[in-house]
Each structure stands twice: as C-alpha cells, then as structure tokens.
Length: 473
Ligand SMILES: Nc1ncnc2c1ncn2[C@@H]1O[C@H](COP(=O)(O)OP(=O)(O)OP(=O)(O)O)[C@@H](O)[C@H]1O
Image 1 (cartoon, protein in one colour):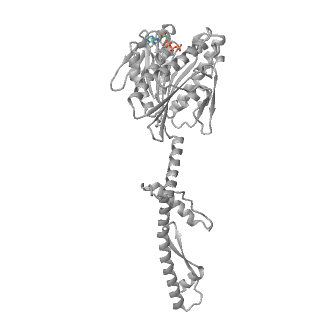
Image 2 (tube, rainbow, N blue to C red):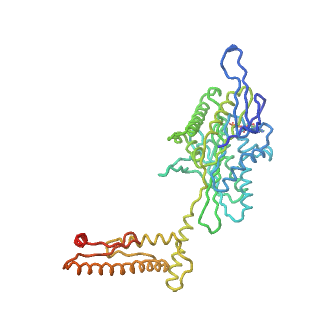
Image 3 (tube, rainbow, N blue to C red):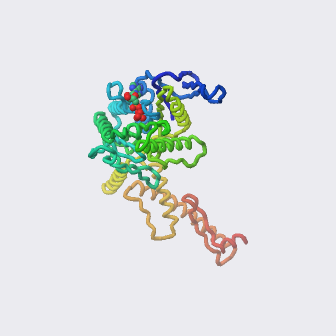
C-alpha cells in the first residue's frame, strides 16, 4: 500500500519534503484559550506519507506519480486499486473522474483508459481484451451504473447488484454489467454512460456523488497468440463517499440515514484496515458491508493498492483533516502480497489435448512415427501406470496407454528389461534350490519366487519351509 495526500485551500499546515525520511505533513492547532492555558491538548500533528501533493499540483502529475505505476502493474497481470478517501468537497471525484470544464482537468479514470489503450497498440505481440463495470454503493446496496435500462430517476430504477460467494469464498456480483470495450472511445462512452446514470439517479434530496461509493473497474485479459496461458487482472478505481462525521454534518431525515450508512461502511472499512494492520489477526471482518466485501481482494489480498487521501485544510476542517491522515497512516501499514494472475485458458488447454490425441491416432494408422520425444513428466506418469498394472493382483487388469505408439513402445521396453531380470534371477534361484536339495538330501525344499519391489528392485521370496531349511543349513 502506498498513501498519497492531496491538499487544497488555505494554509494551516506545512509540508516538509525531507529526502531521507520521506515527506511529512504537519498541522498546527493552537490551544483554545477559552479552555485555559493549562490543558494537555497536542498542538502539532505530524504525518509521514510516501508523497504529498500541494494545491497547485496538476492532474497530469497525479496521473504520472500515482496511477501510471498501478496501471503498468495491471498490464503485467497484477490486480490494482486506487481509492480516494477524504471529507466531502476535498477533491475525491475531481481526482478520480475529473472536472468537466477543461480537458486538462480530466481525472485518473480517463487518463488510465487512454494509457492502457496506448500500451495495447504498442505491444503488438499480445492480445488484450478489456471489459468495464461501474458499481455504485448507496446505503449498503449495490447498483449497476452501466445499465441501459434505467427508466427514471432514483436508485430504485437501476438494477440492484447482489453479492454471491462461491465455495472457494470468491465474490461474484450478480446483475453487474460487464461490457467489452474494444478501444478508448468505447471505454470512455461506458464511463460517460455510468456518469449519466449516476446523475439521473440523483435527486435534489440525494446528491449521490457525495453519499455513495463508486467503483469503476477495468477487467483485463492478456494472452500471447497461440498460448494457452492467460493473464487476468482487475483495476478498481474507487471514489468513496465523503468521510465527514455525522455529528458535524447536522443532518436529519433521509440525509441523516444516508450519512449513518456512510459512517457505518467507512467504519467497517476502517475496522478491516485495523485488523489487517495487526499482526496475527486471523479474522478480518470483510463481510460486514458491501464495500468491504467488494474490495476484499484490494485491501488485504492479491492487489497493488494505492490510497489517495484528500484533505481540505481549512481551519474549520482541521479535525477532519487530522482524522483523514490518521486513517491514511493506518492504511500504509498494510502489506499486501500481489501475485501475477496467470491461468490456463480451459478451451485452449482442451483443444491442445485433443490435438495430441488425434496426432497419436494418425501416427498409429499411418505407421509414421512422431518425432518428438516423450517428456520426463510423461515418462514418469507411464512408470506409475506400469507399476500400478504390475502390482495389481487381478489378472484381468488392463494397461490403457491410448493410441500413442511412443508410450506403448516405452512401456514395452521397460517390461523387457524387467522380464530379462526376472528370467535371470529365476534361473539363479532355481539352480540354488536344486543345489540345496542335493546337498541336504531333502525331498521337499519349499519354493523360491522372484518378485519386484518398486519397479526396479527384484527380490527373491523364499517360502517359510525353504527359509527354515536355509536357516538349518
Ligand atoms: N485540485 C482541484 N483543482 C480544482 N478544483 C478542484 C480540485 N479539487 C476539487 N476541486 C473542486 O472542488 C469541488 C469539490 O470537489 P469534489 O466534488 O471532487 O469533492 P469530493 O471530495 O468528491 O466531494 P464529495 O464527497 O461530495 O463527492 C468541485 O467543484 C471540484 O471541481
């Protein structure tokens, strides 16, 4: 996890760009004289972050510093998440989606889409497939923002997204559209469709952008032509609801209900973050809210996660700013273990097996030998089959090697070696026994049979009678 802080508005803070220890941000809160000179309240709050961006920072710089490294790792098969957290009006939406007025104000989502498609066009040896989804979480319920079926305003007109969990505890989102975008223009159109649905769902009473969480996800599939290996990765771009505390917002009625939902979901997000940052915690409470369930992989799992904490550093917002920074500091303690998501395309793997089988059948029919050698792995599997066949006491047991002549020949040559050993040892054993019989003048001497232990060790088994005579001798 890395945490970046964006600051805006007037100065009640100072930034120290110390090279060795990393940049730090300090808030100075003078003591309230009304509370008397003698009180123990802290006057200075200092936080260290990976990067701190001041108000003058341009969107381009944020993209280059924050989003590009994450987008790059998504291209190589890692999952990535960028989420913006901060109080209402501090610039989360501006950072993630952008401002509508100027082209230069476009945010991380359009810039990342543009970057990804540019990389696809440059890397001609790979085939990329991109799908997009856009989820809005309002009052702990999910809504599909890419639905083309919206009939009127309000969230009730958007398809409700339901969380499903499979036996391996993977999360699936039912009713969430996953739409393919073959180029940048199509992907931007989907972003625009989502933004429009988001605005239609808003009513004057419900400025959803402030009171809902939005997750724009790019699903990437990368494969080399002809290869059965597929890299699948996801990039979540998350615009969280304003983190303002209910007490401060002074709301009532429906707005109070919404604020409580936000507080609860952000509280659960915080609980998950705290649990993840504590060593030896076995249970992480992801299931408490839809937000933490959906972001489960991004927070403590297989994901490269970057948090952007947006801070409105006006004096009246100082408590919120300090609480945002504290939260960001906790997030930075989490260590995720990201791995490349590589899998075998089931269809290609199946077709490859079928081709092998058909080639084998063809060489049997035509008598033309296949030139490539059996691999060590294939040989090992054949040895196991042969051993199971020889060890099986059932005389009816069959050895099924398929139509591949190379495998049949390999098994025959193994059997030949074993049979020669068997014949030699049996003749030794029998001449030994007849020697014993004549030297001891015994009529009955018992029996001696050679047998294989493992597939290489040939042993003699003397019957009990033969053993006792041997011991007497
Ligand atoms: N870096 C910036 N440069 C210029 N304008 C900005 C910047 N950041 C935010 N703004 C402006 O400030 C206002 C509030 O920003 P924004 O809507 O992004 O806040 P927010 O944190 O997403 O709030 P909410 O929680 O309500 O969604 C907007 O009008 C936005 O255009």
